Length: 218
Image 1: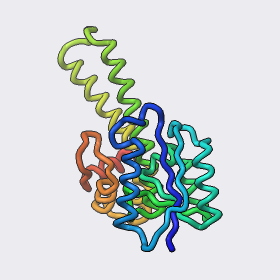
Image 2: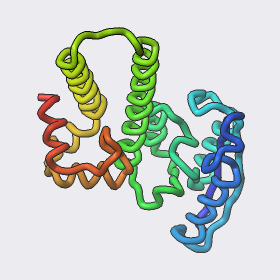
Image 3: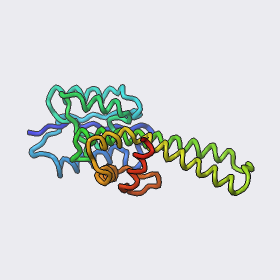
Image 4: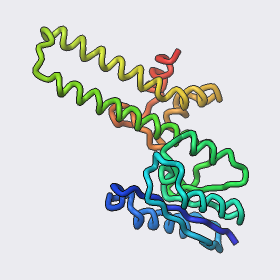
């Protein structure tokens, strides 16, 4: 019989937020069990932490991992960030041959795909943080005379160029390995879109966009 150890995590701020609360995680895991799991199955134990995803020293997670290893059960989580927001921590779990875990919201994802998703999510959070800081700095400087229209346009173009270069650099840990593995530009674009990674403007990836990002890294 297929066995599972389930793990849920919320921070104090997330408990009532849509899509992140305990009920939502229960719903996603139940959907996985009823739709994608081998049958028959058994949930042997459930663990819950009320901790930040940035803190990987969580007592209930440690217990869940230990039990999964001891019993050979699969560790089941609703979303990857419920395990951790740190790609290095996720990578360590993926390398552990004694541990098998499954993400309910990505039922068919293998270890390679989970690693890519974790890396992209971490880079996206870093990008959002930088963008927020830049927006705050721009707000503080609002009203300051920067010169004529041409100067303003040139400065804006420089910002766009720097953002594009930073975005390419943030994604190099994902783009370069796939390119070196022989993936075509179209295949890379499809994989990024399938994983839910948006372009800087929030759209779907195209082969041309992947090509431009790779060119910035060359």
